[in-house]
Image 1 (tube, protein in one colour):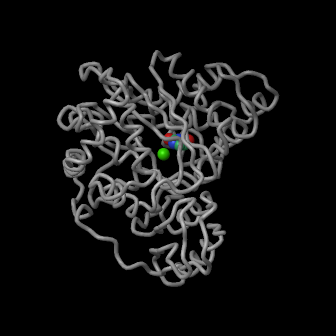
Image 2: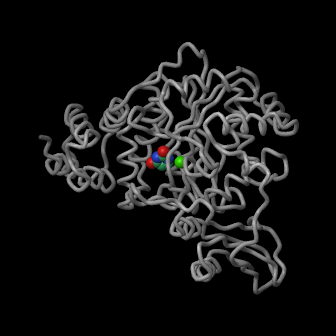
Length: 414
Ligand code: URA
Ligand code: CA
């Protein structure tokens, strides 16, 4: 049996791990031959100490090889995109239907909430009945039929990431370049897309605190991709405030619908348009500005919105959210002064919402999809006295009040 403590010692002492050691550790953990507790030192030492690019590559490949790899060659070109994580980052629910509606095929494997960031998988499940854990063949059939499919990691695809991701979430070992790079790239390589667009977010609402660290993460993921003969496009994006206005699985799903209805032109809209345009431009070999024109048109003429409806219902999801309006919040927080919004403590906003039951901490936890918050301002916006700054949707008035007291400290108005 693999001795994880010994591997951890080697990492600490900068004594390189062999490919065989890394593969054995990942295999034992994925097959449940070692417990979370026994495996944890491996993740802890990677989190705390550095591993080489070669070790990172083997780690990623071991995670990839823990499951099956999709062969999408008979679909010709398939594009994949992934965000490194942020607050109110709902771009997937917008980009996948846009691309699918324009003939750019996408098969998107998404995770659950991680740390202070919401999970796309949880947002998708806000459509009651939506199945995120469909099998590989059904996913490929759906891409053939609809041009796109959104699902989650499973026993088949990147199972090692599914387990390591949950363990990192439970233990707070999240914001680390090597762990993020291997997590994302193992999933992306498992999905078999020939073009991979990576949205690397940095700022106080992202795992990467600054542009420098985002660039390093981007470079590492690109390098892993190039070893695996994949075209990887890195897009850096600043995140010093929630990307959209809403935070929380169902509220974010509703906001994605609003963007596709053309009713909202927030940063979420602009980021989604940009990323979708990059995907379409690379896939169709057309200039970015032409792709952007097509993308905007797909929102304007509702083809992307209709595509999302089809995709949701094909995976068993209810379409009720498409006609639902925002409910009366549990609590409204108003500004006690007049001025301009100068900053948000975005990470704290994400943490507060995660603690409202919107992020799964243990395997058997039930997510409260409805809980979350709405904001109404972006940095630079004017705020009047007594104007609402947060709407809180909580399980109880007590929870809403606690959340409200913390949220007040997350926005700076001057
Ligand atoms: N997204 C992922 O899939 N994994 C990470 O580790 C971070 C963001
Ligand atoms: Ca994510």
